[in-house]
Image (cartoon, rainbow, N blue to C red; front, side):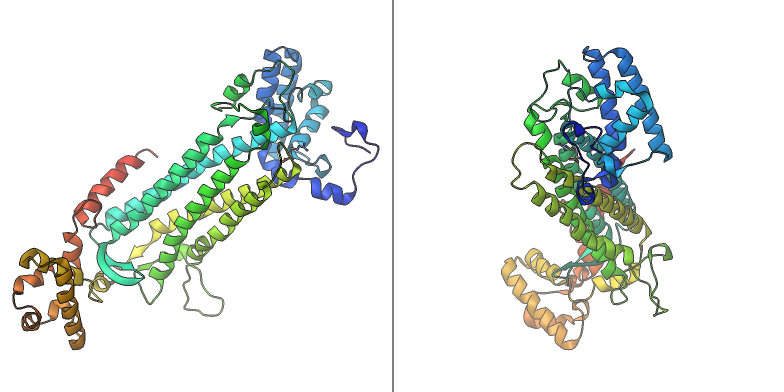
Length: 461
Ligand code: ARG
């Protein structure tokens, strides 16, 4: 038995494998809400333009509302034989209202319909992700405020470099999240054009009003080229690119949580709520959530690459290949939302061992730059010479197993006779952090200004 919606020229139904490879409903039923909204806007427009009667439009709207509640209540019977969400909805509409259902598809095709549904879905996802990024930023800012004065070792090459404020370190991730928000906002702005009414690929001879459906669905305008409307998927690629970059940014903090909570570092601790145990080692507390966030870019960038390969080289306009666009997008968005929730949760949950952080900040000659800077400031030495003198002091201190702050003045004066005991005032992790007051620097006064700026930015979000 041939397909009831497109089977006019067919005598037999599809083979079982044909049906299996063709059906997308298990995945695209997530578009049901958007599909019904699109159909409602289309039906109202058709009636407004006199393409269908207002009685038929009213009956279509009533029927679509019933379909919507059946789906909402979970009583809707999804059918794989009906291929996709669009034909499932339309065929149920026909069961409910009869003949007028057949007029809904006037002047449209599943090609513009699916592009419309998908843009609507992804637009809402962008808004949710913006909110989730803002929540993650708030958790970071909260901790940054608490720890503006907490000194920790800053690293380059994962080697102790210079002391920094823990608050400063955390706000670095808030900055990255802000750029992620910008990328999603850009993607949202470009995707917010309506494909509806492009029909199969060429537009339609019916006197439709695409401005009206675009407006009804919250799009900024109808897409100007019908071929572009049904074939473009760069809007999805762009969102996946934004998601991939956001996931990569999250993975870097996730990795630091793994490092910081390791016993070797012992900078921070996650509560029981964010830790897991081992089935063999009774003592273990593992940061599984952080590790899984660290892994998410593998899946999310995988989705981006998957869809890039689907779209690559496709001739215009629509090809069924494009049906494979939904799964990677749904998976990437689901993954990113979960990762964001986990990172916001862990950012808020972390408790820091401030004494250990301060002790670590003072290790490994992290104040050597401060020594060199003092020579430049107080003795007028060129920085390159001062760097050399400070290097000799590190060498002398290392030989005696002492930090720079405990190397006797006599030893300093052997290297550079003009050094006096005022030097010692700059030789501590805290003094080092507090001295770096340049704009964007790590001094707590600067960090507190940034916290205030973030508070204002995130107000009411
Ligand atoms: N399920 C299809 C998709 O996701 C809808 C469009 C089908 N169009 C077609 N000409 N068969 O792409």
